[in-house]
Length: 94
Image 1 (tube, helix red, strand yellow):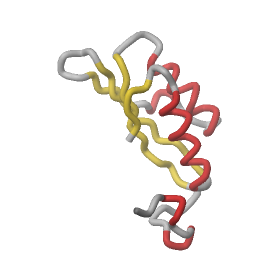
Image 2 (cartoon, helix red, strand yellow):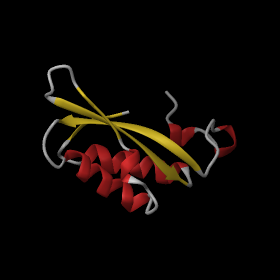
Image 3 (tube, rainbow, N blue to C red):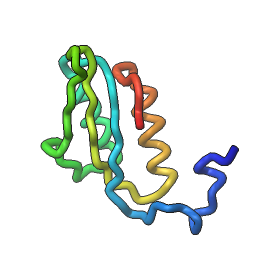
């Protein structure tokens, strides 16, 4: 099975630089959104935290966040995903 790294840049459907929406899910706890914003700011220093979309789960136990990160390369996008998925507060990154 092909992974994104196996696809040559000229065949990528993404043109860089771009603002790429990423959905991040985790427990609905204090500090979750702030932790995600701190990570995103490491990759996109101009990121505006007021643009974060928040959606709690029906029961209110989980929080879904959508952040639109400006990325300049596939490698940077991969690193954003790796960093987010490795954070202990994060359950899923899409």
